[in-house]
Every structure is written in C-alpha cells, then in structure tokens.
Amino acid sequence: MHGRYFMVAISIGMLVMLGGCGKGPEYFEMGQEAFLKQDFENALLYYSKALEENPEKAEYYIEQGHAYVALGRYPEARTALESAVVERDLELTRKNNKRAWRAIGISYYEEGKYTEAKTYFDKALAEPLLSELNADIRMYLADALECEGDFSAAIAVYDELLKEQTDYAAGYRARAYMSYVQGDYEKSLADYDEAIRLEPENFDLYFGKYNVLEKLGKQAEQLELLQVITGIENPSEEDTYYIAKAQYFCGAYEEALPLLMSATENGYEDAHYYIGEIYHSRSNYGEAVYHYKQYIDGSGAKDAAAYNQMGICLMKQEKYAEALEIIGAGQKLSDPLHGKQLWFNEVVIFEKMGEFNTAYEKAVAYRNKYPEDTKIRTELEFLATRIREES
Image (tube, rainbow, N blue to C red; front, side, top):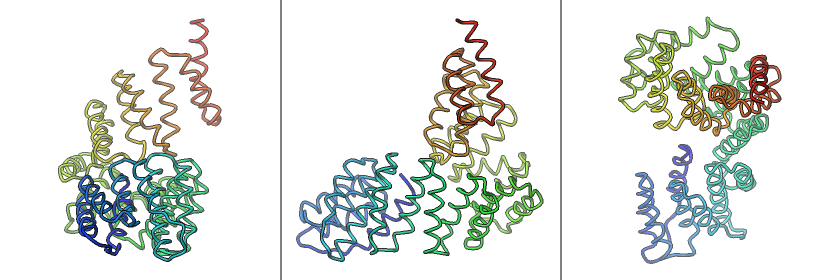
C-alpha cells in the first residue's frame, strides 16, 4: 500500500465528526482506532457495524473504503466509496464527495489502472472545497502520469502544485526527479536545492542531488555533499545509515559494509540494496542476489534497479530462467531510468537460453525504440546469423 495514502487517510479520518444515533458512532470510533494501529481487518469490521447502525452515513462508507484499499480489496473499496457520493449541493456532501473521489482514484492507482485513477483525481481537484487535499491528490496524479510515461505532463502537475504551495518539499523533490529523467539536470539541481533548503536534515535529498551532480560532471561538489553527511556529529541510528550510504558512494566499501549490515538489523531495509552492490562488485553473485531479494521483498522496491542488478547476477550464475523472471518483474514497474537496461538484458537472457527467434524479435523492438544505442546492432548481427544457421 502507498505510504502517503496511509498517513493521509488517517489524518483525514480523524477530522470526521461523529454523529448519528445508536452505536454507530461508537463502532466508527473503534474502527478509526484500529485503522491507526494498521489493524485493517478489525477496522473494516467496525466500519461495517457502524454502517449497519447508520446506513446513510457517507463518512462511514469513506472510511470503509479506506480499509478496503489498505487490504488491497480494490473493487470492494470502490463499491463502498461510490455509496458515499451524493449529487447534492451541500458543503458537507461536497467535501465527502471529494474525499470519496480521491480514494477511488487511489484504489485504481494502487491497482495499476492509471487512466481510471486520473479521471477520479481530476474530479477531486475540480471540487474547490478541502483545498488542503490538493497537494496530495496532485502528487498521486503526477505519479499516475509518470507510470504511463507521460513525464512532461507529470512535471506540469508538479508546476501547478508548487504554484499553490511554494514550501512543499516533497513536490520539489518529485519534480527534481522527473527533470532528472528528462535530462534537464540544471532544473533538477535547482529543485533539489530548494527541497534541501526546506528540509536540510532529509538526507535522501542529498543523494538525489548527488546523482544530478554526477550527470553534470561536478565531482568536487559531489564530494562536498557526501562530506556533509559523513561529518555528522553524534549521529543517530538513522544518521548512521546515511553515513554508511555516503561511504558507499565514496567507494569506501570496507567501512560502509559493517554499518550497512547493522542498518538492516535496525530496520533500514534499503541498506540491502547497497550491500548487494558491494558483493556484486566483488563478483560474489550469490550474496548479491540474496541482498537484492531482501531489498525487493522487504522494502517493495520503488524502482527497477535492484531487479536489473539481481537479473545480471543470476545471468552470471547461468540461472537464466530465474533471471528472466526477475527482469520481467522489474519491467512491470515501468521505471523510466532502468527500463531500457532491463529490456536489453531481456534480449541477452533469451540469447543465452538459445531462444534466438524471441531474442531477435525483442532486439528489433528495442532498436526501434532506441535507434541511437549501438550495442543492439552487434546483438542483432549475431542473432541474425544464429537464426540463419537454424533455418
């Protein structure tokens, strides 16, 4: 489940006024308490009981919908949420409608149905009431556009968001990443700088900026950025994890590895990715695969980098069927940065498996998409000879 959704669902839910008669409000409050504890099954049970007492209460349907979304039961969520929508020009009704449309959009978003998600996010944004929800809705809308590969449209949504909320650090960070994907590194750098100004202790931003500086060839500034992190005095547990990441980026693997190992024990599952990279660099592919898998399974990888790296390690071990499976899983993320490499590696895996016709077909499609990539020409020439030999 999307982390931002969980937090906002709670904050909105806590604003709902209890009312009605009988035990409905009591059950509803118990549902809210269960939701806060992430006990979604019991939350759903209490919301259902509240609706049995007060079946006309739109707020109850909305929170029931939130619980269904949290449990991944998206069609049931939409059924509940649509029950909350009423075509009536009253302030409370319009607010409830907006909350319901937002949640319906999220249900489609989480299900990977981005066209439908966008429709409901647009409906929610068209309602001027509850404007405090607009930034969150726009973040989801931009995410949906990104998942469809419409990066320019996603940036336009972030532009609108940041016109309304000039101090929204998450918006600057998201737009910075989109500009990075688009190759507009100067704009990306400016947005990372603004996000860091707003949240100077959010060290994830520093690593995003580090990647932009690499593209701009500003190695001295990269080093200065990492030194800010490695120079943290009296580091907290979280700071220690960031220090380990900075050491990794500095190439100090011996110093970074034990700190990264400790970080995984303290719940920082993203550290598994960097541990995997260290073992990968040492050609210890078995250990690398283990840590990439721990990262994917534990954190729910937000991009396809770990899938790609794990696939490469599996190829090195000649485990081609497993490699193809993990590459395919990575492709489902529609990652704009790693999608190209995943596709190329898929061609290589089919070639290694001796499935030359499939490899050739995928290589042709790759060349049509990326005609500037000279590597694929070599692959196509080789595959063409293999196909001729078999025919």
